Length: 273
Image (cartoon, rainbow, N blue to C red; front, top):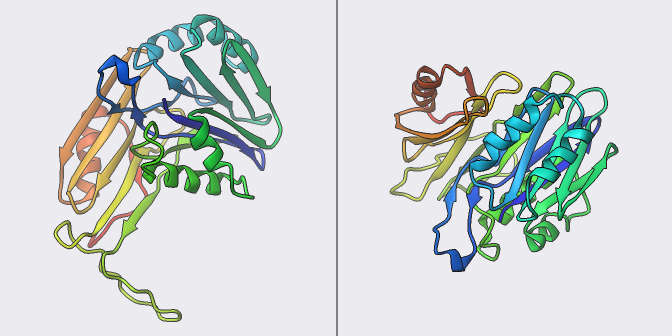
């Protein structure tokens, strides 16, 4: 299970999901983490929920390369016919006329106006949608809250967000910092000590490709001096998790760039550049 969300806002389209991949308890399989949002090209992003694992990558790329480029309606129908009802999908199309397609239970629904589609855990989706605002920022914040809430055991890991503009889709870099001993003052600028792993400090930045339509998503933990990057190439049916230790996010980014050949960016860093 998972939770995937897509929304259109001000002629831009957003698609987001968690990274937890879990299975029914009776299967005996342990959950793990992986990238569940990726791009078929610059203009079309997709997220899945259900028992798809990495088999979805090759099959989706095969459907896409058969000649259905640029037509989200026809592409959605082809995907719907190629997967059983154990897998649900969200497709998002950027450009002059952004659109979202939801594929679930053997049917396709498409919208081209402002609004929200979701797939996955219904209780988690209700929790995310409970706020009066359905802006992309609010949805991302609520999804992050669901990920951290132990009540929703099928949703976890990190929030992966992609944003589609006229130029195409890119993953959105963001940073999170938690200080163990900081009490903010109302009117003064001040230096915040985010601590160390020993003192309970916690923080990370996501690391994502700079260019539109490039798959791959990572996270670097400041206090742990450790990072992970999910490297996905649909054309070669390749999906791998790269891990590296580094003193700073800049060093981690360089390691992954050298390994993958992908130009990367991150949201922020701690300490000296």
